[in-house]
Length: 121
Image (cartoon, rainbow, N blue to C red; front, side, top):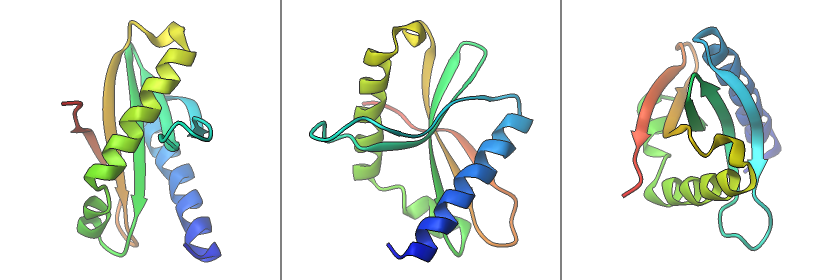
């Protein structure tokens, strides 16, 4: 990933957070990293609304369909593992409903929020 792509992705995450806050979501963490050796990695956004906690992947691509395609099964597994590590370290969220969302972004389009973009099998 080039430095320009990294900056673009980071900007997209901030816009996604603002967009979700306008929809009533409250930020818990941004770019949450579980730590080396866990095999989990990073979660772009963790947000709550009511008793729901959402682990959110933000993808910025030239088109919304390309952004959706970029959320691969490996990405889903990585975020699911990272969410388990987060919940273990933050027991105050143990009674929350867990959801995996995506926010897709592309030039000249409003963000597309996909609640429940995938589920744990």
